[in-house]
Image 1: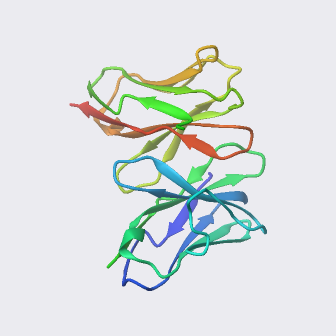
Image 2: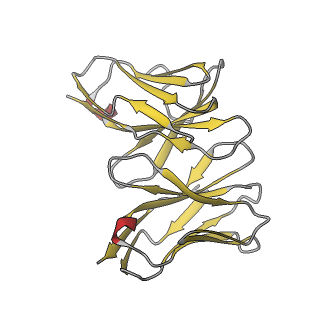
Length: 115
Length: 111
């Protein structure tokens, strides 16, 4: 149980394009989803927290206009990297939490490479 | 300010040995302390978690020891296997709140 699916697992695109990453909870309702960014050999850096039906809460220093988050249903959240540039290249990971439960369950991440 | 401090940064253990990773925190409002295992190119997977009303929790070869007064908790991997080679992250959170992750420990179990 508690499976989180993230898609795509790997994407390469040209500078200036927008990229959408999907995060789905497959067997539970995710009232809260989190989006992280991870640089090589580093820890997870929380970008934003989203609750179903509400606007996302962004961490300090994260550009909300660049990283658009939508959590329109209890099983789906999306992260759109707008006008992506090479410095946005990274490993993006989502996690989801069920109502009232503490554990976060993570997807397998998306490797984003901007050329 | 780093909310959770994790050590060591890397660890080499012989097969069959005990791997020990330590974490320390400052915020006494934290009430949930999970450990995650991450393999290269994959997302973190929940290993085991503990709450501060318990001093120890064991699941298979994995044990969390929790010292509330010292504000420290540790992960012990008994009978370490090469398949345990991965990066381990501790975390802490307040009730139904975001996680504060440690910096990670890369474990290498030698055959």
